Length: 384
Image (cartoon, rainbow, N blue to C red):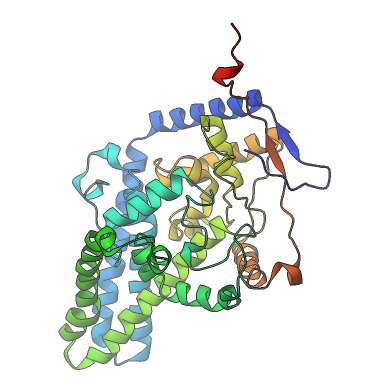
């Protein structure tokens, strides 16, 4: 794994022994937290579920008073919080298997379904498997640009990307639909690389799940409010919009701000455990904030820790973050973190900059890290 850009004092070089030691230290950290899981973690996730359900009941109920603007706004706020908690701190983390150890049927990653149009099984393939296995590897991780955006300099520029900011805005507003369509690989369909036979099962699952969501939010609940159909419909649309904008912003801040690095398939071929850990740290970014902010982000504000340990309960990320940061400092690795305004501003600046031809904006610089890998001995080199 080699990143050839340079820092002010030249690239950081990690030896195979250092990388192996990083792997051992992170494995030990993971083992310690896993052994400590117990009652306080159960209490945490139960409290989040209770809050989410409370907000949903409050939001749905307040819509019956939606003819009064303050009650409508309060209903939208409560329903938005419900959807954010369901998607971020509950759904995303449950489907990572973070709570499987509890053996609670409602928190089982294999059967859990969330309040969004994307089927859980498809999300687990595109996100849990493809993204978390091949984080920031060009040609493998389809989260780089989501098949729509130019989000990294390694993506070859063409005139289509002049619309980068517009595409990003549309993706943000319709984020749950973008996530739903992600596994179809629409760009490959356009290029003729995928055929109907390849996506037929996926499309049927999406139509079935999206149909249920549309029926619930845009028909059933508005109809139940009788003469307040329009205001309830508007409230549900707004709550979904708020959730989409929030989820998009948190996820993009964790993956695409300035300083986050990408990799090639050649650089990451036959990775060791330590090399995988290093790639996760270099390819992620955190967001600083309050305890409430972290909860509402699903603790994806600790994206570095999440990429290192995607199946550890997310409420533990704030606890282990100082240790991960200290490990980075020990070996001179960057620990990319900053307040929300800084990270989201960096993302949008990058989106706008990469819309333009490289000849106009030039080439950016990133922290340089070189991971020295033990050379594989070819059979022809073995003497005898």
